[in-house]
Length: 178
Image 1 (cartoon, rainbow, N blue to C red):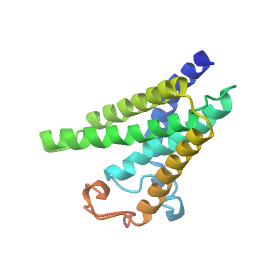
Image 2: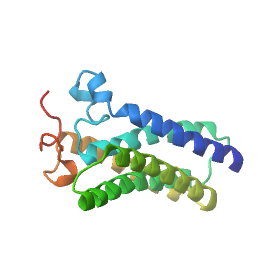
Image 3: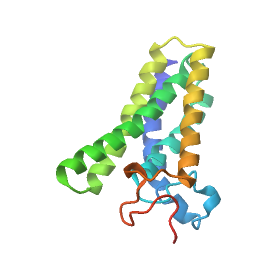
Image 4: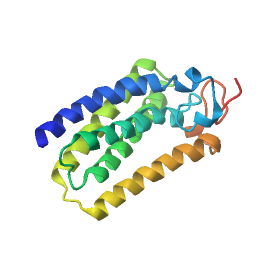
């Protein structure tokens, strides 16, 4: 099982990176259709860019759960930890380097996106293969994931007016007029 799980972890890195890269343009490709805004980045804020790892990561987790013949007992808790780590790395790297350099650089953002995916997937694999879980661990993991999903939905339509949610180019918040 560990060898199959390891291979799926590496495939997940590629899948999340490629799908997440395309995810950036999803709202535009769907004609700025507001009912789908919860799923796709709707502006250039850091918060909206975090959707690029979360939703493709969730999609991959669901695929991985189906492809693993025997799911580890802490699978969903491990996935939740990986999904929490990815946005923490992206936000941490972005705010650190922009504080030092005074502006953003796309190559650094792309690198931090990739780094976050690798770290999240590897953490998830390590925890899933080492933790003893059970129903409580699985329930905790699914609860964390559900709360993250809820936050993306709620804060897409009603973002707090703080820096994390502010669109860089327009200084606006949430779904901006097109």
